[in-house]
Length: 294
Image (cartoon, rainbow, N blue to C red; front, side, top):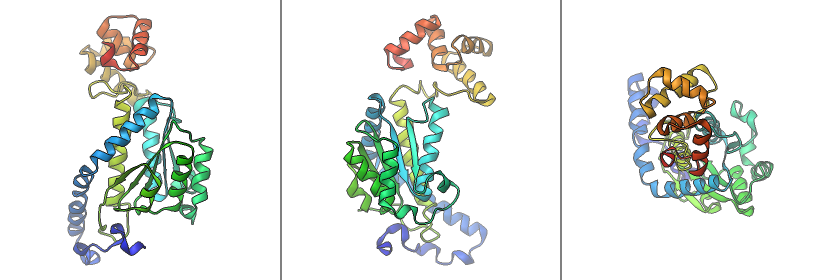
């Protein structure tokens, strides 16, 4: 079956890869990478439907859950982890699972991706339910672990999505929504951490970011629910307040503290000249959207 997958075929443009100069290798990689965004553009209709599903899950108390093996699994975990500081959500709201468990994030766990049952067990451990959206990620589109995760999620009534880098992928048969970004042969045959991995990362960026915007985590183009977990993010929070309200640094810092270090609340307080309690109430009434609050 592997020889039929576009991601496993040899790239005719790099048959002499081992004999290329460093510059030639880099140019080949850059040329191949440049095709990825165009390929993704062809799947925007499908990606849009997935975002709508994720927004609905969030609005009803559900979660976004990724499941993958190898590079695909790591990319899902990376996206999930980054949502916490960027959008101020709990670690439970966006979760990533990888075949073989978290050990597999840094060390290959032999045979883990070949287990359908392991995929199902991971979804069971996450208590997947009908409010959730579960996204299975596999460059090849045939990973048993992902199939097991998707099948279990469907049984529990969750909305299911398959993301692959081959057309007519096997995992597409196990999901309601399908995103197939056919990136074609890699410059290094079968190394799907390259173009395929880039495509998956871009698609996951789209899904999580657009979904968070859809539930009020962004005002203008500012991340107004950012968590100030370190000095850099604390300073960024103050700059966000300055950008959103056009106040000076001292005023932004003052309101940042008055708002109990909640950027979104500080912005509403300044723009409406309200108290902390009034700003919190206004945000609650508008579902957390700053623009609707003001």
